[in-house]
Length: 185
Image (cartoon, rainbow, N blue to C red; front, side):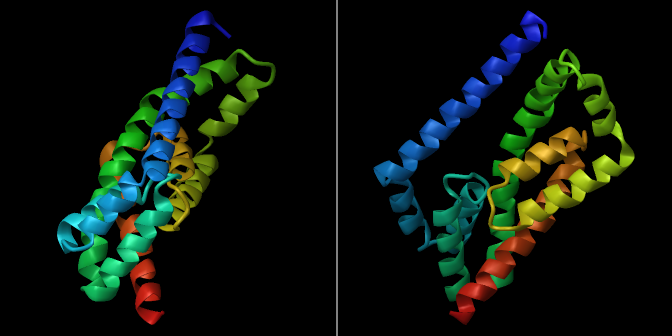
């Protein structure tokens, strides 16, 4: 592994760690809970903000609760559309980082490892790209945090417009399901 690719990979991991620490701080300080509590009163703004936080591992649970409560009291489809728009914004932030930096630096690091060339070849196969597309999309649609799904899509070298459409459709589907479940409870 070259010093440059190792340095970039360390920087990427450091950025991830800092964002995790920040997310944990938001959750533990109660700031996120207060934000969601006040956002519930405003269907559009609340759905959008909760949608943005629907994408991250540390903020998924409160976002699901908020989206469920908004959908229970309002139109499920409208809540899902606006929430999905917010999710696209959150996913784009993660996707831009992973697609443009992390996946590339990880591939460079793997290339210099024993067996890295075989793995790199496998990752470029068309079947692997379809598999990452389907699995990544399913993860984005589920209440699971989107980082793993976005990482998989980052390896598939998906274009931004395709990712925006995929993120919107899968997040909207997931939020509709959350809204329907919330209404049935």
